[in-house]
Image (cartoon, rainbow, N blue to C red; front, side, top):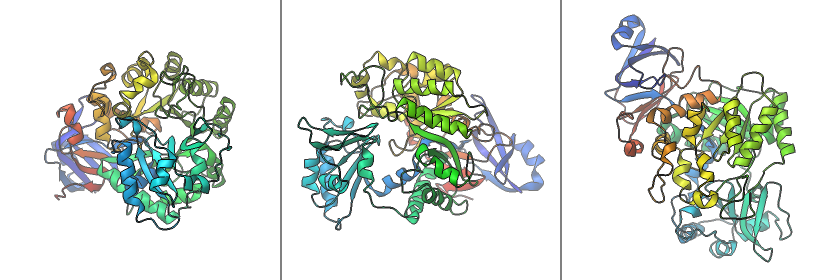
Length: 533
């Protein structure tokens, strides 16, 4: 028995403009697409439900190709600082939270971003000590490549004035060598290691909270990287298996495996795409550099606003290649975080020397700043790029100060990559950016900064079709599933995002206002704004 979906705009996304009148599904698959009359008469005896879309718009289900599901859930639970507009607002918000802290309880905040403030200062630990003198405090920057800690957190972590910077990280100090409370990239782990251990039940709860939010935004799946941050691979993996059980919660979670827990995966005799119908394991995740906001993305030339600084290599080139070779020894693809052009070039050079012969695809996560050699390698190699259109809205105009106008020619260059046949997948990097794919689609089209409302580098704008494509077929392609996900075709998964309005007809400035009417995963409605049948 099956369901016949009809009565709205149904875009297959096989080619631009392709549309059908109806879709017939059985269980978790699309059986056929075509006219209502043909499908109705062909499958009359098998149709159990006729679902009238009542003028709404059906698309293949949106997939976020790079986010952090657990961290997104924690952001929903914790103190969210992402919308605050000044250091004073942050401090006032912290003051309001300290009164209810119990002895030894950590105060944790998420998402502060000094580049969105009129006065982009970094809050000093002495200011945090005044607000929260008796409890450890940690505030994670929006990029998650930096954090602030007060003295209680620093002392609890046994970080001293003479503690050396770790490889790939910086403990920021003043001219006297005193610790300011600002920790960059791998130096963050010095503080995070002292956080209380969380239980598997806590992780499962956070995953469930996150999934409820994700499906309400029209997402049917996401490629997430969480498995090395919460105490153990096994505990976190089991929390995903139990939290997205296919009964109480449905969501297609594709989990990248950080190289530091890769052996844990092997010890459990797990590998590529192993897991369940809703939770599967993917590529090996590696960090090559940091982020632009904290000036730790690894560049070929100095930062324009910080002479002498080219950023940070998280791993030495020798160790980076060792990690990739280990993945290759198990026939695994890699997904490498590379924001700066030097990072991208070095990663792609190593991939070129160490090809994967089984057809699985590597991924460059972000690919935010390229140079000519990196772009040439991307065109040559079987590598998909996970892009974040919302970075344009968040990073401008301050990115111009960081990089200078000349270097921006191949930065945030989504259209250039697509036109040169580089496969791109759309993502939010949530909780770093808002998780809504409609916001990402709009950003890819308009490229308007949230800070000043100006359009930056409009020649890199995507069409509506291209912007939707990266969040559907593009994300499926990145994990070798373009033959079963990301389009409305016979044999594909019955995963749909149904919108209240036709996204191809709405003004681009209004795309983010379109309501999600329904999210469908494997033929089952998992979110519905207004149930009507």
